[in-house]
Amino acid sequence: MDLSVIVAACNMQGYIAACLRSVTRCSRENIAMECIVVDDGSMEDTADVVHRYTERDSRIRLVKKEGGGLSAVRNRGLEEAAGRYILFLDADDRLCEDAWEQIEAAVEEDYADFVAFSHIVLQENGKLKARMLPLSDVVSTDAEEAGRLMYADSVLNTCWGKLFKGSIIRDNRISFRTDLPAGQDFLFVAECFARSSSYMLSKAMIVYYLQRNNIVMQDFDMESRLAFMKIVYDYSTAAVTRHNDSELAGRMNAYYAKELSGLFCECARAYRADKESFAEVCDAALENETVNQILGGVDEHLISSGRERFEYRLLKNKRAGKIRRYFLLRALL
Image (cartoon, rainbow, N blue to C red; front, side):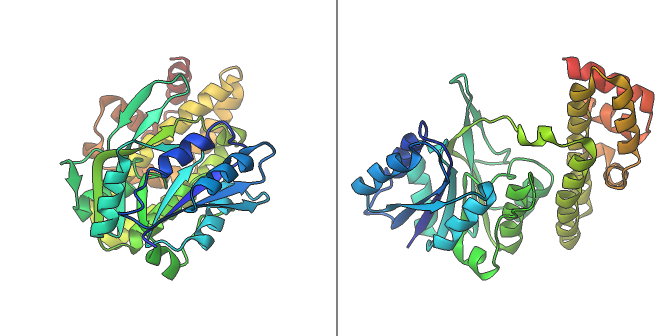
């Protein structure tokens, strides 16, 4: 089997047909493909829609799983997958019309252990927005450039839009963590990345990704969010340390400093009607060990924008009053 496409589905009756239509465009002559749809206890007609496609195309099969969440669903798909390469989709995503040309070439030529493509954001208002990987060329096989995007950027943080070597996943027993509300994708992708010895990144766009608001994380307070960030940050720090690249380490910390600024801004939005509570949360966050570890490892020269440098200095200097006023103002914009 050349390729296993794993589709996670839960109550996706209105989307799954378009997703599966895009999958069935795969040429039977050029590539041996299987599509495994894992239905996570849907309460509506998702399974019925999938069954109609299994009747038309024997390459599609339905696996039912009752509960467990997205990570458990993807892990169930991995248990079933036999492909030399693995491709993940969510049921509300779909492949671009010319995606299979890119996928087939990568699979047939066995370009690399880790293959990542660009994508198109399909916004809820129907508008499309191209999101190309920030590469130095149309295609890159440069391991250093790949490492920079993996550990010092957010563009490779999700599992979709990528081809993973099935043998690397199976031999190293890589799976999605089921004990975290966030960061599972990054940890899975980063583990596959770390176990790979060759990389191919492309500006070619293969996936229409439906932009979703991260409503799950809104249920967690600042302390919990920082605890989740610590797990991901510690993993990245260990990986970058193995690279023995001081510039990459500086870029990684600059990236996480930017993530911290975003977290302070989200917190300001949540507490803008309760400035006293926001002050308490900010004061506690500024004493957090991970926050100080991140800010202490930043090479300011590697921060690209003026606003990001200003926010870094603000947090680094722990000017609590200015921090509160600034992020409360930014939260209003």
